[in-house]
Length: 121
Image 1 (tube, rainbow, N blue to C red):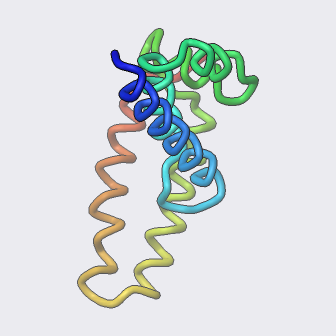
Image 2 (cartoon, rainbow, N blue to C red):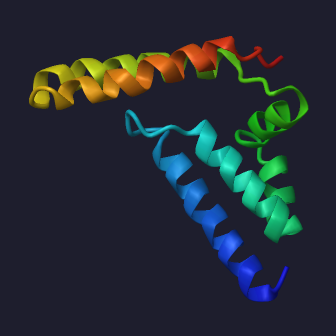
């Protein structure tokens, strides 16, 4: 991969990781998919950044579990469902019809998909 492409892929990984970290506090912005996307970008562009992410005490286990078994920790599943529920209830009261149902249309399938994944150890 040319240097300029590696730079773009690495930058996409950094942006994805930043969005994932923001998603830890902002409802409806997922954390895990963005961290996994960052890991994919770093694996293709920067082995050093990938090693850092895999060695990170909070984010590393999530990436390693996903790569090994496509597994998500049960605690992360509960937290995701709780945050999605809060955000959907909030949207029902704050956003005008019919747009207030859009978060529900996204969160229900996402929650079902998430709970069908195996639990990480």
